[in-house]
Image (tube, rainbow, N blue to C red):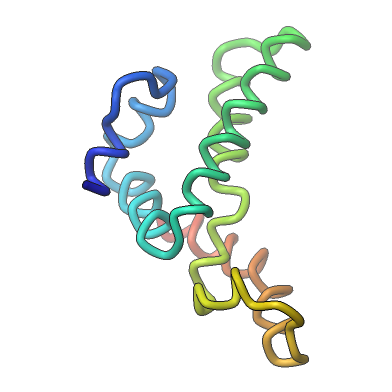
Length: 112
């Protein structure tokens, strides 16, 4: 079922194309497996970014960079336990993990 989400009809063309590549596809699958809300948030953020980018007149290559960046902006979250997503009131150690996700984001983007 989850694999179907990656290729369902109605995904913007840029997202369907992006998900065909091994590196980003693998990272997108990890995001989906980590927590579905992260994956859907990534899609929504990328779609909104594309709309705004078109509204301000970005060229196609710039739109591609913008939407890919928007899609992967929270990918570092897969470095911490997904149970923290729904946890109310994070303690100090949990907060450190959550706050470190931009560092993990850089690592994942360099790897893929």
